[in-house]
Length: 313
Ligand code: TXA
Ligand code: MG
Image (cartoon, rainbow, N blue to C red; front, side, top):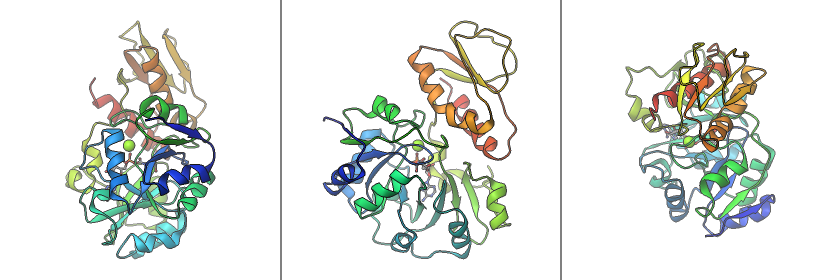
């Protein structure tokens, strides 16, 4: 199939109305969207990405009113988080309403919902006239795309349309919080930190490994965020010597084939996934990532780096 590139949200929305999939920008990473009420279209997302069928998708809305048709109940904790962080890089997990097809949530009775704050994303979802389900628009297991070109690199010929926007503002995926109980459980770290969640709901906590991680957050068990190169946390030693790369805030004294010096933790988060892709294009075999303090977005950044380093290839 030919992948149409457009910067018009109206044109892109026509594809959704015809029951096919469209990649679009959000403030976190690019997503691959389909009409949440169209099972055939949703199946195309799984096919295009080669995504495991047991990994649920996040619903994206353009107005808070749309949440009520997707969830059976908006809990008190969800209400408070929505008030504070919607639109923005936060996904709340609630009980799914009957109308939402099972394929959207990989058979789970819960559903993750978020409202992006990126203008083009909102115009696009509004023009579609329906909430969209959208995973990150990468081939499954690859780093999430932060530019439309990265989407094109993975999915050209596999999807019908890419809505071309700017590189994404944040660069890491949304924070996912299970809001079904009284004490929310943070399932995936993102740019809204645990601390910021706790400012709104003090009893919130991070999912612990004693919990049934795989049942609560099926996405966590799959290989994630990984470039082809092996990722290592920088400890001051370049053991790989050749074909190695470095990304970090401090200037390393050793030589690297490829090197990216970032100006802050936010900039680091913004650049990480694109740097992984650049390393793959350049045939790098080891990527060293300087560790940062695990506070604010630094916690999400270290989470992605550690996952990539455990992917073991
Ligand atoms: O920032 C983002 O969230 C991006 C943009 C496109 O919105 N989307 C994204 O989607 O990262 P995806 O599919 O790559 O990651 C979704 C994560 C997975 O780890 C999945 O398991 C989890 O959210 N998730 C989705 N629905 C869930 C549910 N009902 N219960 C628990 N976890 C859920
Ligand atoms: Mg993803």
